[in-house]
Length: 324
Image 1 (tube, helix red, strand yellow):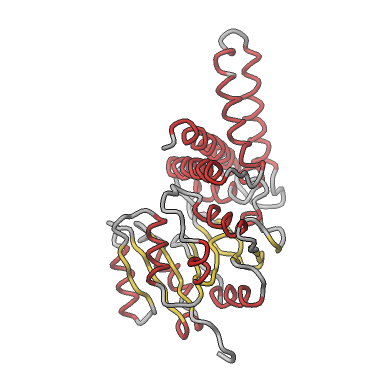
Image 2 (cartoon, rainbow, N blue to C red):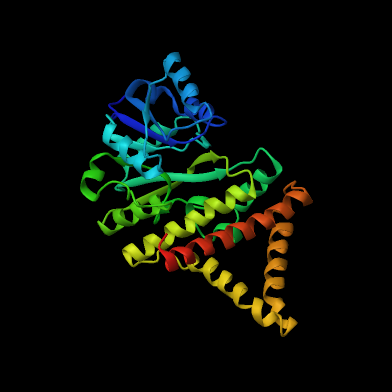
């Protein structure tokens, strides 16, 4: 390195990530991390051989420490990692990703050269199977994720949240650790506290992290159900809605539910779900016209849209009603 760079700790909480974690760790172990950093893998009691893979990489000489998260939940793992981290800078990482060259160094450079308290990039979903490919496309489409800058990656600038995140460790002493009660949405909740503290968050859309999404609709529904619950918890906790898009799935689900009973008396009420289905199909079939996407994948993408919308809306309403 030609200049003084701060020490860095990369935090990777995980659970049963044997299919992905080796590629993720190898992509993070660049020259900067090897010279000035460490990677803390915080494992939530995996049962699929994840720990054995991590230990084999440690034996190879990669600068990895394996920590065990006995409480298993993601936020406990993140907080354990922050507590145990030796670096001045904290870089959050996901085991479901593959990182571009010099990712950690670029994140640290961005944090050091900006006035932001958190910096990050864009999620770039990629699929290996037909369903996973369809989910990846849905996660990159406004019909699936609204105007979320960290998903669409249209421009760089100051935002309300980023993918993953890079922070100075001392920030957590100032605003607190991740909310251990969070089911999901822990990043957005932390970023909301950063903004409330008068600090800024910067997204660099040239930082693109390949992300492998859920490969089944059941897993996708479970993920977005938890996202909806987590968002509702954050809204109630902070009494703040960061974007109107967050109410759209809730309104949609209520409309569809309310149209069911009247449909027994008048078929006209079926127009609401029919219009929704046609809208999703049109969005899936006619998006990215120049891209080689099969009809099957496009139909699966429409199903992914519906799964994401309805599961997220259901999660939000369930938390609002039951608080669990």
